[in-house]
Length: 96
Image 1: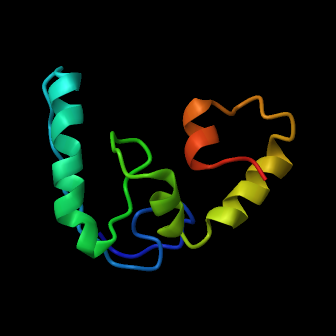
Image 2 (image 1 turned 90 degrees about the horizontal axis):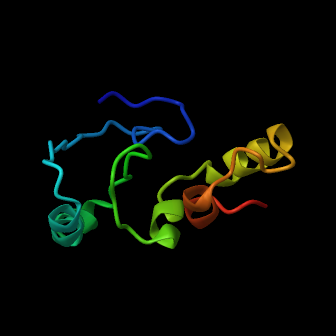
């Protein structure tokens, strides 16, 4: 994928390769194999896609998105009451 300028894109300021899997509805088996896939890809510091399943630690994910704090500030400005927040966002994109 060609690089782009979208703050939360896996291709933000870098050309990227995407690896997509089609899973059957076996969430336990998927959860079991994801860490092995992520460990194999770790040397490349991949940026997980926000709409896909991943288990990368929140601190590691945040470190891979250089404009994340800009996004967090914008989110706080646009949603000051946090009405659009959820558990996932609180974990990966904590409010400022």
